[in-house]
Image (cartoon, rainbow, N blue to C red; front, side, top):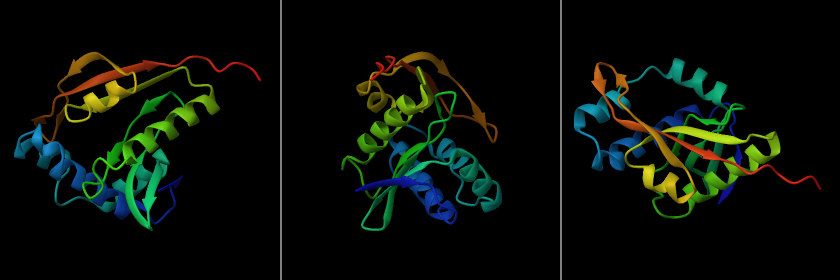
Length: 159
C-alpha cells in the first residue's frame, strides 16, 4: 500500500471510490434517497475535478489501484475521507488517517475537524475524535445526518 499526493487525472477514479463507499458501505446507515442525494449516479465531472484539485487529497494505492483518499486542509478540516468498497478493513483508512496526522504535525495544525457520516463516526472515534455537534445538512433537498467531530492535537516538541 502506498500513500501518494493527488495527481491530475485521478479525479474520475476518486469519484468511483467516493460513489462506491457511499453506495456500498454507508448505505447501511442511510436511506436510498439519502445515498442518491449524497452521491448521485449521474454527476457533472467538471465541478468534481475542480473540487479534487482544490482539496489536493492523499491517495492510497494498492498495486496501482486507488483504494482510498483523504485530505486535510490548512485549517485542520478534513473535507473528504473515503475508502473504496473494494478494500474494506484492509488498513487503508488507518494509513490515510496516519498520513493526515503526519501532515497536521508538519504544518503545525493543532486541531482536526470533520463532518463525519454515521458510518464513519466509530472509526474517527478510535483515532481520538469526539462528537462536538450532531448536524442535519441538506443536499438536493434531502437531509443527510452527520456529526461535527474534533480532535485536539498535542503540539510537537522542538527537536
